[in-house]
Amino acid sequence: MRVCIVGAGNVGRSIALELLANGHEVLLIERNPHAIRSETVPDAEWLLADACEMGSLQEAELQTFDVSIAATGDDKVNLVHTLLAKTEFGVGRTVARVNHPSNEWLFDEQWGVDVAVSTPRIMSALVEEAVTVGDVVRLLTFRKGSSSLVELTLPDDSPAAGRRVRDIEMPVGAVLVAIVRDGVPRSPEPDAALEGGDELLLVSSAEAEPALRRILAGDQRPVPDAAARG
Image (cartoon, rainbow, N blue to C red; front, side):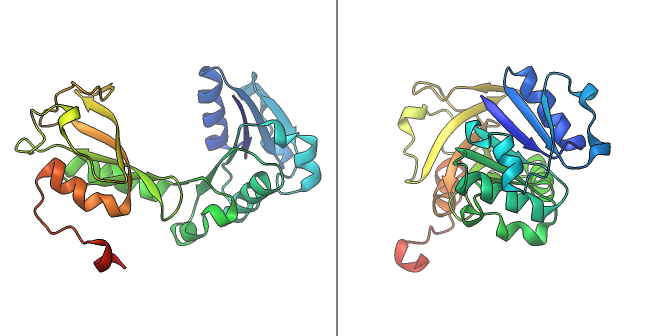
């Protein structure tokens, strides 16, 4: 997979090293000549350019990349780049770093953002995950207002504990993607039995979350129907 990373600061270089270690091709674009430290990521391609300029992105042949990651410390730059990457160059997947929580609402499909990564949100989610059992914790939003990657830790008295995956009727809009037990991720095979303490990773819409709490954690709070939501 070919990945373009905009911003060669600590965040951008760290992402590049991880992707290279996993066998991907990486291009780092940086507009500050003093931030070009190619010796720190020698296996990546480097380009000194402004990633918000059409000419620079044409020089980078951005249309040949599978993913573009805007990882600068400037939200304006990240938004402009993702918009150009998606609308002008047809990049299949865009990821944008959100530096200031007050700007998070802007990072949606209208600005070409497929995945918005907000450090404050991730940190708060990790805190919630550490202390919350039986509730849905949003880890990552794929498209604002659509689906999220969520985590739910099964309480010991969960109605799903001891049942096979095939016997649990998930609500519309929710899909179980992994079971983490003792720190080890497992595939949610149909015959796999759930246990109290299992961490379940799901892709879910916001509307499906109350039903997930009821089915997986025994939360008896009423699930609003479609008419109530409308």
